[in-house]
Image 1 (cartoon, rainbow, N blue to C red):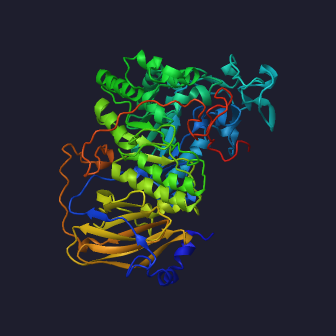
Image 2: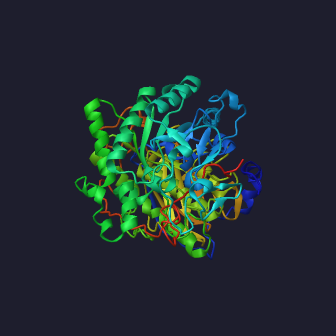
Image 3: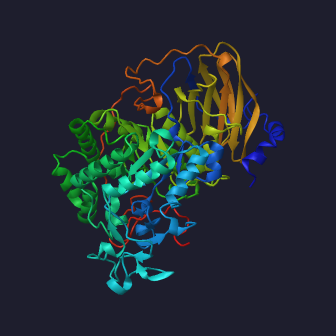
Length: 627
């Protein structure tokens, strides 16, 4: 597969061979597509550039994209010792302590894997999200160790083929081993450890207001510690525990670097909004009526977990005069069968592309065990507005699967457009794409569509489609030159002839056209300019394609300032974007309830034969657990 740079060198040939794809008369066999409308007369809300982030981004791709945010997160970061550059891989890999490769172990903590991560980000101009531990444990030293020794705890269902004494903590009868000693692998760590670590980072790389680490995730998916880190935390994390641990560690972050931004509680998904980890564990074990009356929630006046958590953070600020939570962060993995897992049959591709509606559509019922109207981003916004105003919203892990296939690239382009339109403040894709994957080209369409650093605009405008399952449309204005930028995602496998209407052009106009499609997944092609007569155009969009139109400022009427916001701060980068699309206003969010995950893996949605036998594991940030 050619790199994008070599693909762009063939630009002239691409223009000749693809001249009729967008401009001119529709091809005879193209089906009728949905009508698209754009209103460029009223400026909307700022699009936070932090929504275009990744976890563990490829250094070359991050440099090319000028990636705004790069997260160091995942299960293996919950228990990490910066002094020894050693992490416990939790249920991802036999609960083992595995030292990282470093150039000079004797020089540690200098040269640790997290030092290297920050150095990569600083070289590429990316802001770092670092994960700090709330769980209270870190690896005790730089030696390899395992949480469930076969010699100590008996035969187990599975063992590490390279370290056969390390088991998965499941006995021969398929039951989780209990009563193991956490100090087999770990030593206690609290606020003082976090202060020391941030002090090391700040003194070496600068503080958050001077080019250093800006963001700190308050651990990772604490509500499933009882599965992923059950060797040290076998019980579910309850309401009170999470409040107290957050108070302690978030306060330590602010004490060490007062301008740093914190994100929490970093739940794993849907049930994280309603239930504590304790209720999730209890109800998964008990089933039945537990889901409708979870005991930990009942003990806290029946208030759903995320609401209560945000209320406690607000109470802390009121009492102490210090905001210790800056972003409400909740992970999101679509739960439809095969979607995140990368399934590529026709039905799964179609489901993957429909599932993006769960992020914004109040009429879309999720096609999984959730089986409810999720309306995720407006729901998250409503949670903070009602319980801790001024808090931003973040999704520091998400993945719609198949990033190495064109349909996965389309889904990612759709998701990035939704994030900007719906006013999300920060997002980082888990398991980033290879630079040659369609998923990487989805990012290029927003951050570097012409190979010269040109970007999709940074102010959202109103755009609508008659059928979001066929074609998505996103519109923005670019502050640097006033250009109108439109992103069109054809999620149909068929070529479509689609009418486009743009309000706010002075007369006839011409748009540059950039396109990525299954016809050539190795490059973004620049096509002949698209004529727009009297604000109208007829577009012929190839099946499975992403098309960007760029209309220069000279062809537009002056936009009116958007007046719905009354509390816009001067620095938009530090202002939460709490504003739905202009056509929706402050619409109500559909009601929600917790859904049973018994016999279902909460992240991958795969069916489990026995929830006690298969822990809710997830991927390790290392491509291989062995070095």
